Length: 343
Image (cartoon, helix red, strand yellow):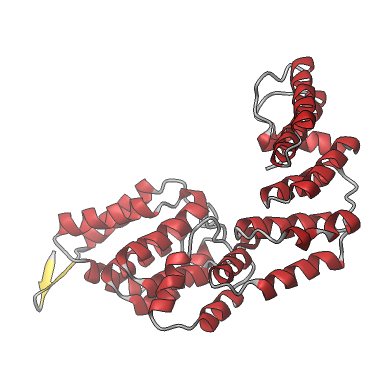
């Protein structure tokens, strides 16, 4: 270690050891292999280097700012150092560099970076992570960031505009978050109607209907009972798997009358060979195609039972329960879970 003007600098050996340590921690190493990157390991490597080299994070960060990372590991190390050093001005550029060299960032890494920023209270960094990886982020709560915006003086309209400016994201993550935000403030009606009108405009597009229901469920938005009354009239899926997904989506929204209609339709429609093979491929059990078909029918029946019970139709529910039990016994399914077949 060398000291200049009272500021410690990292020796070439120390810097080499930091990079080596990071490489050992993050073994599998191409820029595309996002799964090999781990934020916690990077932070541990930085902390150990600071301790063993008797230097400081700011010094390390300044060194990293001078160069352009060529690999995902180098880019992640740069982001970590800047965040720990509080050099927020360079964070946005460093995150863009990371996104450039790491074309397939995994959800865990994005969540780790985002949570690290929120735990430190560096909301500008959290915002930069959310914006930079807006197309990839999923399954991470951004409610704390939205609350911070409002505590900082942002109006409802400004926060809503920020959400609207995001790309839809994986599984419409940002649309769900925007609808949920509006709902908390009692101002969700216009967006909900817009989403409903889009789905209603092409009711034969079952994938769009399923996506629409998933957005409502993801936003924890439960529409009024009459709001989806058009669905059974206009939306007529041709595939059993589509009818099942629509039925389960409606049940999740407490629209059980409509759910029963679609679940019964799913039982009537024959599974195509393509559907059966896809279902079999998703089974954790080593089932035959015929067993996968039976397991699918069991899943529909068990979802149907839940809706029938909610509607107070106990006798029907009991009959369906017995039918599901017979299918399990006849096809040797035992008590194996069928949930992964559709969800």
